[in-house]
Image (cartoon, rainbow, N blue to C red):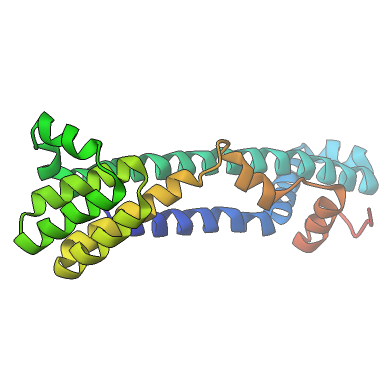
Length: 220
C-alpha cells in the first residue's frame, strides 16, 4: 500500500484540481445555459426575442452553476472519505510493522510496562537499545505512546531511528498519519465551502459575458 506521504500527495493533487474548478464554474455553467437555449425549437427562440433569450441563458446558467457546484461538492466528499480510509488502512499497517514484536509479548510484560513512569520507560528503552533486545524497547515505546509520554517517544524514536532507517521511515509515517487524522474536520464539506463560497448573480453574468454565449450583447 502507498505510504502516508504518497496518499497525502495524491489527495492534495485531486483536491486541488477539483477546487480549481471554482474559477471556471460560471463560464462552464454559461455554456450549458446556452446549450439549453439552442435545444429549443427555432420558433420558440424567435418568440423569446433577444432580451428574453439572453435572460433565459442567464437563468439556465444560474441553475447549471448550482448543479455543477453540487456535483463538485459531492465529488470532493468522495475524495475526502477515500483519503481518510486510505490513511486509516495505511496507519494500521504501519502500527503493525512498528509494534509486531511488542504486541506478541506476554500479558505479564505488557502489564509490567503499563505501570511504569516515563523515566522508568526511558531506562528500559536505553537498556534495550544497548543490548540489542529491541522487542523490549518497542514494548516500552508502545506503552509510552499509550500513556502520551512525549519525551520518552522522542527519545526512543531518535535513538531507534538512527540505527534503523526502515524503522525511522515507518515512525515518520506514523507521526504524520496520526497528525493528519487528528486535524481532520468532522464535516468534510468545510474545506469545500470555504474555497467555493456561494454563487452570486454577478459571477453568473460575468461568466455569460466571458464565455460569449449570450444571444446578444445584452448587459445584465
